[in-house]
Length: 437
Image (cartoon, rainbow, N blue to C red; front, side, top):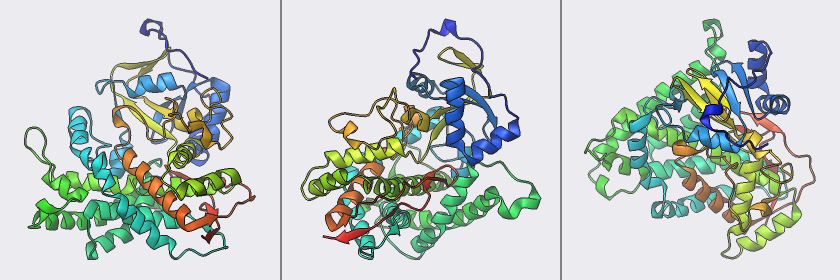
């Protein structure tokens, strides 16, 4: 349902609030978020209020015009939800605000956009070829873990440009650190008696180990006599300066590297697993992709990536925290202290935004660009800074796989969503079977 945003003078009170006990809302939000949001939208409309742990008073938005209004509100009105700083560190671009955020984003943009991205394509192809050389033929296997290994090795090589003991240590640390962070982002602190199963405790322990390793790596890079000749992301960070000549501290670089390593690893790998889980159920799409991959075309491949992100968004919400006296969104007035969340999954499943949304149809994006309701990377000034890198990586991985293998069509039942905390993965890891060409 698309709602025309009225003039500010027509704003009224808060949107309808779900009248269930807070504990019940919290359990539903943590255990079955997408189903709960879908049911609430059907009953209360495109904007409603929940009260859940970690997020507190939460206004959920599933209208593209109001989503844009939220994303374009200034830093004096909204800021990022504080739980991201707990996961990625207070120095992460996801945690800083206002002028500091704009300065940092300007500093980090060059390594992740434009010509620089093309220098990483060979790394992606090499890591994909290394991984798929071990794939079984004619036997179904879960694609998620291979995709995790590819994207982890890619981001490690892109960030550090080399291998060694410290990088092997990080390679071993990151999967558990990312998993703990994903669970921690939606979980409140548990009582001390439950510390052994508290993801927040696990996250703090893993963060401490990561910090020790990464600060050693940063120190070694600073003292590298060939630093000026390196083109990896860490070297570029160390040599970059703000407009006033100042530089990022080691702790800030450590937080930004964790952001790149975590956000650029799990979400991309999970999207790829969903892509393979989806396309095997559509023989005509498989055939068209195979033909395209043998040439220089990429239009359908890009459309498949876009449709996978629409139909199976790995991250299903993007939130902001109200810091002004109030925030006006459409006909509603949201007071200070509330959180506002754009429900990406609801927008992507809206039949008024995408015709027949339950159908996997990449051809809807062939020859056209996504509408404002397509938001897998978020929106506004906090749109994912690594979106271009992730898109390039997915394209190269899929192209490389399709040139080496035929993906066997499947009539198996589609895999359900499995919550990994923040991210949603295929329940059985995106199982598929392939045969070499």
